Length: 238
Image (cartoon, rainbow, N blue to C red; front, side):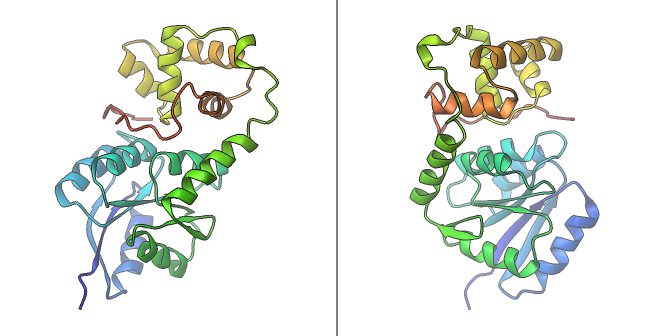
């Protein structure tokens, strides 16, 4: 008999986490090896246990799930991360996949669909919008998403007001999915200063929110679409 798929659950809501464990342990080819309640613990435990699949919540204390996903996916080759969230936002799915997630589901996913996805991502494939993809297909999906969501930008790079060095640093963290608190702690500035930089960035880019700013930076090539840098493990308590 093949070895069971070893799963780690990163979820700060105990009821949902226990429900996941109960559903998964019914399956003979799945085993839950650990449960953690924040992103920083998820990274530490993943480095210790090297599970096959991580089920990752997004909004957790200490470090958000997207940053934890990026660290795990870049550090542990072969560990697949499935992001589970309460919010059905395509923008969040984009940033989850960019961070290295192998699949993205809203928490009302059926047990059958989630279990099927676990088995798929354990083979090195991806699940995007219910479709099984290769890594190359995911990369193309990300590129198309950027193209479709930046068509309304009328400014070209030559007409933009240049960003300062500090604003570029803030933008880089923003594209990684960092909160204002993480950005402030990482750069040694106040959260108010981060908010001021964010306002200036959006004004200079001619965009209306943080997501549009991040997408605009990716679209213009200021920050690589497939960033190989590991974000610093800074506390992200919200």
